[in-house]
Image 1: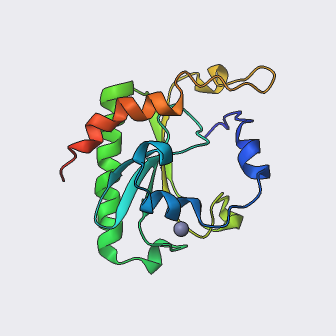
Image 2: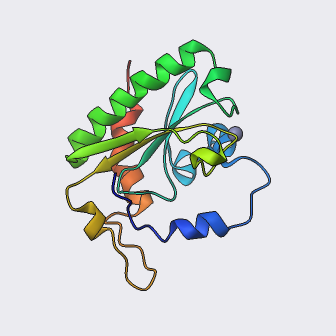
Length: 162
Ligand SMILES: [Zn+2]
């Protein structure tokens, strides 16, 4: 995997740690749009990554605050896999990416930004995206704002059945 040059993530890395886990805040939130939540399942919820590697970068996280899938019931892992398939399906319909990166970074040594609440990344990729994702003077050039992306994807997730 080629690394995408995403300096806006620096803001995330350097911002002070919040009092409460951001994923738990999103899991409990009433205002789905402001927390970028698209779907809530029985064990997991789906949200847009606030510091995306590409347009449409989703995350599937357990509702419970756990640092490893080994601490969740097996049903949570099953649901997470099914939701990952749905995310691939929806992102393919909406954005026609050329590929995906899907995976988890477990533990800070594994590169996890939020290492105490595990989450599965679904990152759509396009041929050449390592080029168009470059930035000028620190301004991010992601084609859509997060709010626009949420608006576009929301109808697909509202009626999600599985
Ligand atoms: Zn949490």
